Length: 485
Image (cartoon, rainbow, N blue to C red):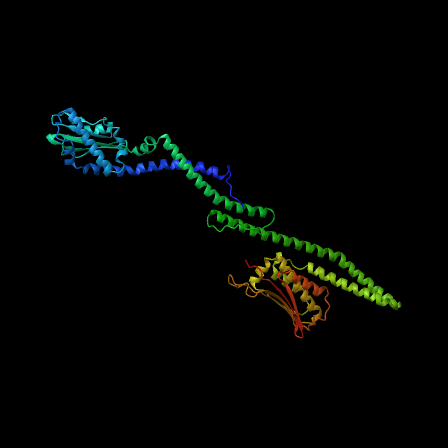
């Protein structure tokens, strides 16, 4: 069993730091986006909060003190400050960090007495909030004062106190509070280290899972590519996923199919060229010499009439020369048959039979379904054997049967039309004539019948069946179905 290993210079090492960097960037971008989206929402929340303050309860929180006493005035202002802070933290989300923990002057309470004296909470108000206080009139009937500057805004509202005093509550909203709170103020070295560990652990887990899923599929592609490089184009990548890698594997498989077909076609063409060369060489050398040998033996037979004791030997030699010439003619004719790879089986059979029967007066027909022709053209070697069987059977009928018609048919059974999952019946290739027929059992197996059986055996699951009678001869080759894909 092959184990999965993570290489320290592979995708795993590249993905882990990438995940950490992306995690930090995502945190910063999330804070920035949240700050932008929160700005308008926070303004409406704070205005609603200040508008809905329970002013009598706030006035009662100051107690019955003499506000003319600076210490008592400061205590009353602090009481109002913390009461507002408690209510705000309860009713407004993120109110405490939004105000910067009230340590930067973004929330302040000022008490003004009718005589002009007053006090304020510490620390001092921020510049924008101080300007808003200055612009706010000391009048309970006046509306809330809003002041904006550089994206910030400050709001001042009023609360009536006993003795005619007025408490003014000011809030300064700073849009950058969230980034400052999450990344600067609240991010200690320990927090950064912990975040780094969390992101590293998450990145390592994510990268390990991704690399395991990815590399396993890539290795299948690599194994198939190695087999292709070694010449085994039957290998296919087993990946049925519908993602990009699955589509790539499907493209590679189609490429292997195309290469296999191209190499098969190239091989068939090379065989065709070599067959043509051999046929030409035999015709120009051995066949011509056998013809001359036959002439010499005929001349010798004529001269041997003056020597009767030599006539049987010379006659037998001449007959052997005739058989040799006929065999060479058959071989040259077989080598000269059209190439399946160039013309296809239908055209090759038609041309071969037409050339063989030309001038004989014998009619012939070819019944080859389109689906069967397409399947056989995809297997040039099997198609060539069928072509040779057809030529041999037709040549025998021409020479010996005295027939007037030859019918050639391919009977693919249900293989071409069968539904998926249905077993297809065996195919049959039939050559029949209407001649006088012969007794196959009484005929010695010569090169003709022997070649027919040998070529039938070369087909996948091939078997030859010869039936002959008074109504003619039927040569049938049974073989396994060819793939139509």
